[in-house]
Length: 268
Image (cartoon, rainbow, N blue to C red; front, side, top):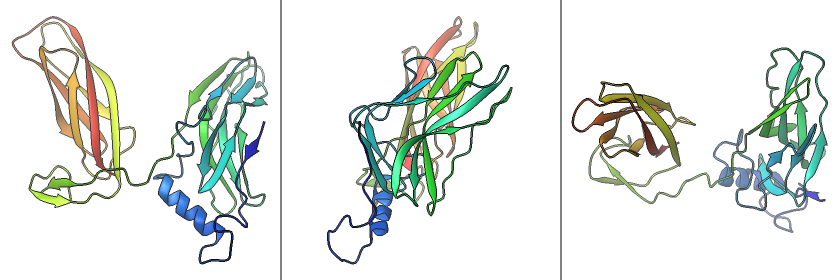
């Protein structure tokens, strides 16, 4: 098993030049993370640092690669941790993190252990670029039995500027109509699948969806559904959420559940 992170001295150019190693880290961070507080895993590379609980109190981090605050990380085999069960009647949250330590000039996978309690809270990440910087890749909930529940928290690295060549409208706001051509800056894409339940005798139903991450301004939102008898429309859109309405084309019908699909695109 090998964990590897590029040393932060004597790298990148191979000779004295205008950029220091920390300069290069800043460049990589700005290129590949839109939000360094949550993004850290390189998508599509071997097993993407997937976290599992193969047995008992063993936490396993699969092979993969990532970046923490501009510092590269890679491992080519499973890494196993053994966590302790909390005391009788207590529970605990732990986090699996990618941890950059400036003093050691290294990035490693680690367990950030929380405080056990009847109703525990998730431990806080340390995110100080000058000392220690942590990005969570999984949340662990462990009971005194012990029973472990894992929540995937991986956010993947991406180019800071999403690829949208041109946008046409009437102003800087994406929902202002017009014929002026703009070159967008940082763009984000989001999508989801939700359901609208309509009671018997009714013909209209709504659901309000909160975007996983708020847009910088009101985005463009496109919707559809799995029932052709209903017209699906986005009726209220803000930078943080969208209200989707399903309306029957003809008249009042019986109770029904409709699956709706939405896609949003807009500025970060």
